Image (cartoon, rainbow, N blue to C red; front, side):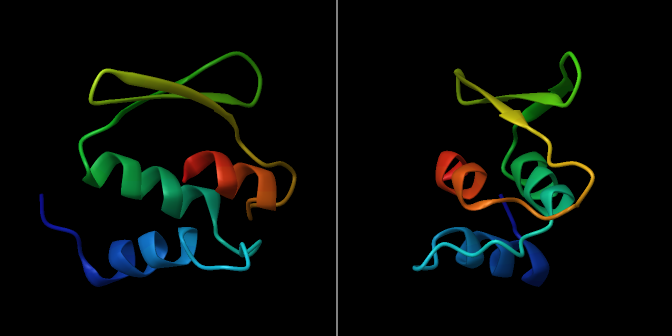
Length: 76
């Protein structure tokens, strides 16, 4: 698994304290894909992520594109 510079910065931002609220959700999805996750769209704004036999469901932020603190904490 090879991450590019942007993906490394997003990973670092996810684990920054205090939790950042300016991380673009699409960048988080791209990071999931880069580490081998499968992403499927659920009902409404739900996004299902499967990574290493672990399943998680997130709510894609709308109308803004940035995640909130709760979503970043869940991604951690």
